[in-house]
Length: 503
Ligand SMILES: Cc1cc2nc3c(=O)[nH]c(=O)nc-3n(C[C@H](O)[C@H](O)[C@H](O)COP(=O)(O)OP(=O)(O)OC[C@H]3O[C@@H](n4cnc5c(N)ncnc54)[C@H](O)[C@@H]3O)c2cc1C
Image 1 (cartoon, rainbow, N blue to C red):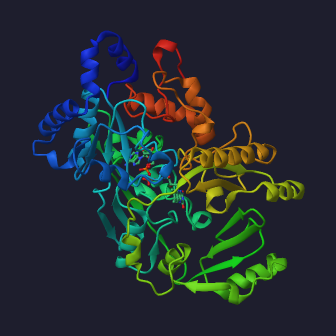
Image 2: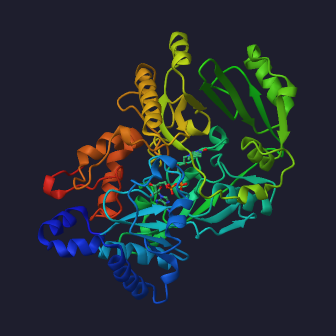
Image 3: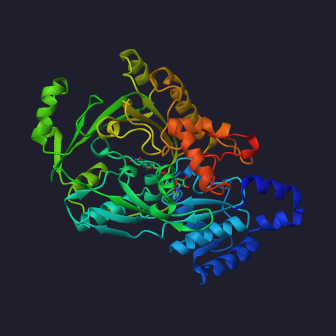
């Protein structure tokens, strides 16, 4: 892909016929194929899908996880590359750049705004779903995980190797490790062990020139200071379970400060508001009950409210899988299954007063509160790109989903979520009003195509990355000076022409 500035230049200089050729699917396919063959030195026609390929639509749709972005008017890629090796990834970067198209990388396709498979300009999807091998080394308590593997496959592979190790990753098994780990990645062990990205010790990435690098060859600055830096594989350290039994409980009241993880779900139907607390405790039920008796007696937690399970049992339990079901169920990728949805996020740094909560019940749509603290507060905010550490009580996810395909349903749901977000302003973080990168939300700002503006980038950048934003801009400018890897909310580069130099 040509750098943004250069692409604009070309748009001005090239005759119209050349531009038409760039966006014409079959000629793009032929040029792309030729380039890929040259770069890979082998036949690659079986991994490239043009719009005329009979499997194009099913390959595209398999990992679209938001039906809102799966309509006839949604912009479609000219080509999809289903890479099966690092050399395919590298060749795709080189050839997309050479042909002046935008590259979108998709691992599990769960991006809430579809940034891995939707684009306004001619684009190629680098689809990682076939790069899914996982090598667990139980003795070393680590694993190499390819970016196209799902969380369910990672959990399954760990469980197959040992029942003493787990991994602090997200809940939904179909989420891709590629997007999830590179955007932070939290799950039920957040308070005890931090994020999935906190466990990454090495990674293989492909840079904008197509070079395949690891931590050593990319250098510490690039490794530690670059979100979405990890291209094709991660090397993760696992955490050892402190006990062979975990306890889960469900209660109908709320406190945000429990031993390991408590998730509060709230949902409003037309006549009722339902709230549920779900918690994971790494230990047995007696310990958990006695903890609650001492510190939260009003909750009245009883042993019969708890279920003791192995870590794998708890992974299945959180996914509402019936007790006794084989963990093989985690290998089901459920392609082509999606409802329409819209999500937003917030961070809460001071308790919400009772009056605020009472009004909230009246307005509520789907809400999930994830308590922070514990390990999350111990990791300094500047250690990794993810900045939401000490000082945060909990994160909120606002969610609306709809199954009606009409524009009215979408408008109604999106209006509701925006109105609730606006109502929450006095109760959440400010300057910046922080957001979680993995809960992609284009409402909080976008970098318009053609601009690569530092100012536009800063609007959403400080919400996702807080004080780490300027450091990320510096790293990005150094490693990708042509800004090849970009999307509506990527880190901008410093343009010398604007004279913007950060200290
Ligand atoms: C049903 C559901 C459940 C979820 N549950 C959780 C949860 O429990 N915890 C949590 O933290 N989050 C959760 N999320 C959010 C999820 O972590 C993010 O949407 C995540 O980015 C998805 O990763 P993906 O690979 O599936 O998505 P994709 O759409 O493939 O990718 C997301 C972003 O990462 C980029 N990307 C993908 N792969 C790569 C790569 N290999 N190299 C560089 N960039 C890449 C994409 O271009 C895109 O910008 C959930 C989302 C959904 C839809």
